Length: 303
Image (cartoon, rainbow, N blue to C red; front, side, top):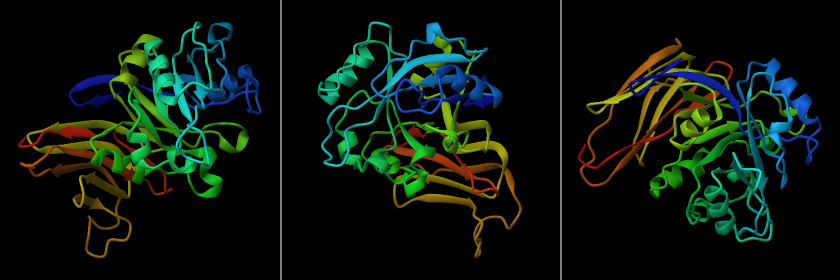
């Protein structure tokens, strides 16, 4: 349960980027379901490369299954095609990797899907390249399977996009191909229930947060004050348009923060910006070094 900006909603643990033997994964779809069900997940998306795994043919064991795929149209990068996760495609969706990226995104959205830009740092995409795409709804801020070469985090790309006016929520994912990728990053969806309609409505409207472990239980913004409650964390930082930021606590204090104790809540007064809109997000880290990120909010100029 979470108090999400004044709305009490249930929370559902979701894996939104997962591969099976229908592409290059190590496990069959049934085994993938068994693994994630055993770890308390509520929502699971099969995102095989260029292949739509038919979820109606699978027993979700009580989990909500999202029929999805990972798309790879040509990109401006010489090193990688686009990696785009399309969540909730229909049985009629026809994937064509030769289709131009924007046309393919628009086609997926018209089909009812939500499109997420996957692991941009690993792919080597710049924020400007991503900003040129329309109808993207989120980006991955953390991707487990790209940690082996140190490219699992995409916070800088995310913030650069926000500075450009493309203020996206983010997901954290396993991008699971084998056992080494399991259960290190997930997305928490805030919704009334875990039906596919409620889950997709929450995702399309940004009612979710990304995490490697820490949990938010309350997010609030009112009268220029942002407040949050969360599981114990030793680093709590509010980020906003450069060069501003709000240090609540950091591990290496050196005169900053609140000392060495962990925190479970914060209150940050955000000054009014008369000149332009301001974005704001909260980033927290627990004693195991695991992060969680709130979806950014946009504060209009003068408010």
